[in-house]
Length: 239
Image (cartoon, rainbow, N blue to C red; front, side, top):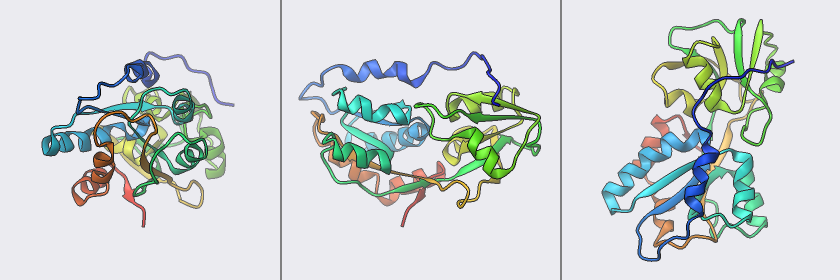
């Protein structure tokens, strides 16, 4: 059974969502992008380059993947959504996205720890199956036949990374993007794709887009320049 752990951590990404509920001004170049929490560091790097090229400011709002579709359905202001293709397919069926699914990227799941770490049988952090998480940690540990001395439950992989960097856990389940976002973390071993297939992501303009040319940023994500940034951040271009 996953142990219940109470910790002090960064404010949940959900608190940032209030900012995107404000109606957009028609003459602004700003764009609002909602994405899975684990994608935020990579997309912010791409957004910085896009601003240098076009002058358009792209604000990235990380959100628990299970909360993205409910927000879109409730008409919370978003110009672009970057999330799992399964969620985008549901959004298309609900009529809340306005464009076809773009280029796609894979995000492998790995066992990670602080650089130089190698033990996975002591304190192990794994996200619980909640709307904020996209990894069922206990189920994945069972499939991997890993039985650590202690399992620490977490809200999402952001919290798993926090437990690792603070030393509360020696190993944990993360996406490759989580590892690449923190220089203190490293991969201990990959999780085989047949055990946990990499999540597949894509981008789309939403029906709520009111700012100029959100399609421009979606198209930029598929360029060689953006692909290089996303690859360095841990995302693999899907063929």
